[in-house]
Every structure is written in C-alpha cells, then in structure tokens.
Length: 237
Image 1 (tube, rainbow, N blue to C red):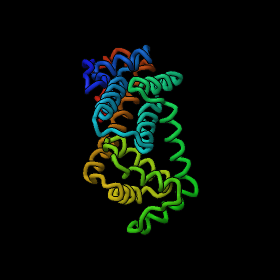
Image 2: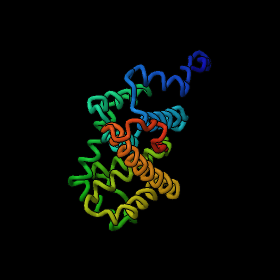
Image 3: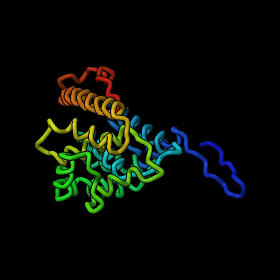
C-alpha cells in the first residue's frame, strides 16, 4: 500500500494497490475459486479497483446494477452455490463497499423498470427528444447521473444500461440496441465505447458458456485426465 501523504494538517489515507485489493478479497473469501472463474473474478476485481481509485469515481445505482448483473450472469452456474454469495461479498468488501447496498440498488432499479416507471420510460423512448421526467422515480435517478461531479463511465455502467433496457423491453430484443444508444446519448456517454464494451461482455459470456460445458465434461469424468490449462481463456474485460 502506498504511503500516506499530508495536505496541510490533514492526513490523506493511502491509496490501496491492486495487490492490496486482491489480498483483501481472499481474506474475505479464503476458499479456492474454480480455475474457469478465478480469472474472471480477478479481472472484475481489478476493473472495479482501478475505477474506484480514479479521482473521478462516484458511486451511482447504474454502476451497482452493472456490477450485480455482471456477477450474477458470469457466476450463474458456479458450484457450490453457497459460495457465490461469499464471493460477491468479498468482491464488494475488498473495495470497501457494502454488498447489500449494491444488491438493494440493483433490485430497486429492476423493480422500477418492470413497473409503472418502466411503462413511463417506454413512452419516453418513443419521443427521446423530450426531457426525462422530473416526477418519475426511475427517470429522476437516471438524470442524477448528470449531476456534477458526473460519475466516471466504466464497462460495468454500460452493462447496467443494457440491463435496464432489457427489463424495460423484456419481449423486445430488437429494440435493445436503439434504446441503449438513446440512453447513452441522453447521459452524454461515448456511444462507440459503450457498444465496444457490450460486445466484449457478450463475447465473455459466450466463452464462459464454452468453458462451463468443458468443465462439466471434466467433472463427469469423461475427460478426467485433460489438464485444466486446456480450458478456454475467459477474459472479464
């Protein structure tokens, strides 16, 4: 960990290093993680670490939605099931976050998107030149992204945007790309970067599915002698 520095009479706490964050993660979750998932989790941990130590970092529920969605999707078939929550807790706590806040904010946004707020947002998507509502709770929270200091964008925020759109249009997959682009523009985000990040996220899910299938074969004993190194690489970012 980097040494503390003094600004006037105030002591600025040291900035944790990547090694510090990884060490904290494995202190919170000391059990081994399957090789297929270890790289995915460590890359997600490093991604969150690098974002958080950036001076422009500000927590926002959209980020929480992306973190929770990414974790739950990537770890959907992890066994033993009981370890999933321990890993998520470790991921958050290693960075000084309350995992319950992440879960609560993510669930609240999904609930809003599936209710009256989702209906209101679908109406807004049909006329995106209009300003977001100052009365609808979901649209108010979306607008809070633009409140200075504006949070720093990350791939996980892009995943949060996609998740929100998927909940608002659960049966309209063909509408997702346009809706994501509309929200990206409204929130003053870089549309090309968001699209690249989401393409990489989809690619990661495909690779993980392949790795999970291969791992299932190994665990069944059909390929018991195959070395773990033969599993496909699964980048998280």
